[in-house]
Length: 46
Image (tube, rainbow, N blue to C red):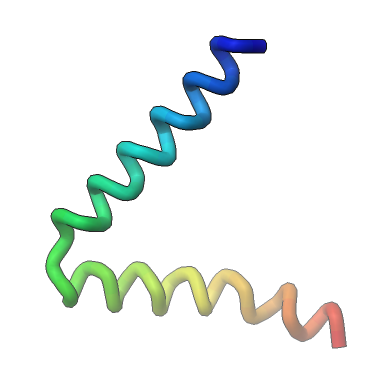
């Protein structure tokens, strides 16, 4: 149980560090991809 918690915390820390290092273009592209992936889920909820 403790190892799972440590793993989850470490993956979040590395994800935040990766986002902090990325330039704005990479962040914009990633946000567009995530929006595209969420679009079908939004339409299913309506």
